Picture 1 (cartoon, rainbow, N blue to C red):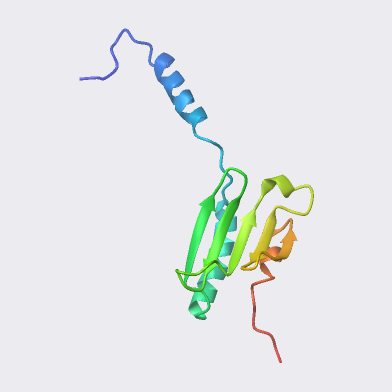
Picture 2 (tube, rainbow, N blue to C red):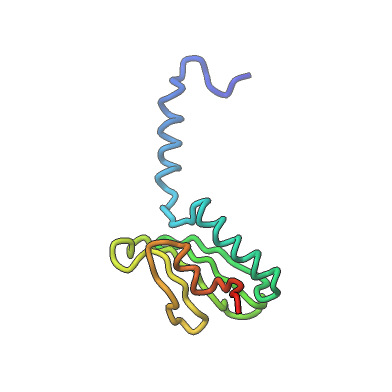
Length: 123
C-alpha cells in the first residue's frame, strides 16, 4: 500500500514540506573534510606523543571550534577556530591558547596550525 494517493501530486506538498524543514534548520559553520583531516592528523600525532588526550568539536552559528584537552576535566589547552566573518580581514582560522591569547591567525589552516605543530628538528 502506498502512502501517497494516486490523485495527490507527488511534488506539491512533499516538496513544500522538505523546503520548510530545510529552511528551519539554522546555518552553522562547519569544518570541511580537508580541514578536519588536517586537524585530526595533528591531533593523532599529539595523542601518540602523549600530550593530548581528548577533544571536542562545536559547530556554532558564527564559528566552528575544535578544542583540545590534556585531560577531560580541564579547560582546553588549545582551540582551533574557523570564523568566516574574518575571511577578508585577518583570516578565518586561528589558534587560541588556554589563557585566550591568539597564537596565530591566518587565511590558510596549515600555516596557522604551525603554531602548535612541533615537528622534529635537526640539532
